[in-house]
Image 1 (tube, rainbow, N blue to C red):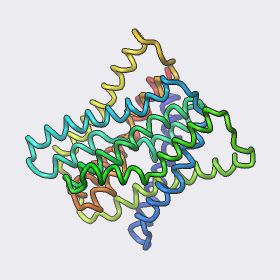
Image 2: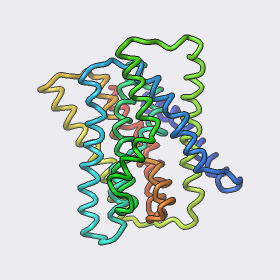
Image 3: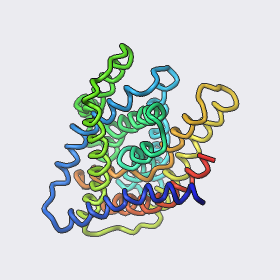
Image 4: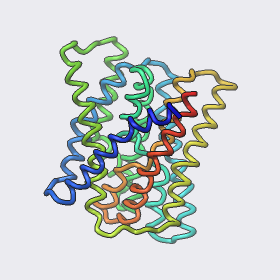
Length: 306
């Protein structure tokens, strides 16, 4: 129980930021979309660059983005196909994205910073790169219900700064180039800004939705995908490696599992709102999953760190 409360108290401040974001979004004239662009195009690339330059360059670690992308895509495909059967409309599209994409960034990165050293944190960041690729390709396509074709998705992907930060970080890592020590405080400040603004953005997004849709069937299905299927698939891969392949160590397994247990991604609210694809249902799922994660994530972490 001591470990549980230790993790819980470390996560609680994140929810304070969500609350502040909700109040600010409700009563102040704040451009939430502008803040989202600031995070995506300015802050996130620095966080990703710094984390990857502290990771260990091996084939085993750099296959993680592919694994994360494939798991997201598999879960999305399964729930999209099932959603078409039970809904027969655009709800199938948004069900697929809320069931498959986790908040590995705004929610997961702060926890990873608390739990892991720089090496393991870098491995975790590699996993978030795979989720980001999924978000900027499959999620765009599904949310828009085919409004954007493959070419449009690839053009959007080419404009994503996180990809170039990833490439530059690999270059620096491969040639063992180090940033000057005077940049340390700058990077730490960027990490802090990412956490604070990212969690507030969840509150901003929720505050802009006037009517929540408490579709309990939809919420339950999204929970099955995000909190049951995703972790089970990742657990199977971990057990496969532990008993047969032996590529990774226990600390790396913990980073893998953290990727799988975070709540539904906050960015799904932004996409659904901008494209007007059932934003009420997406927002309610994100809201419930974020609060569910307050207990769920510490409980799972207790077992992971025994």
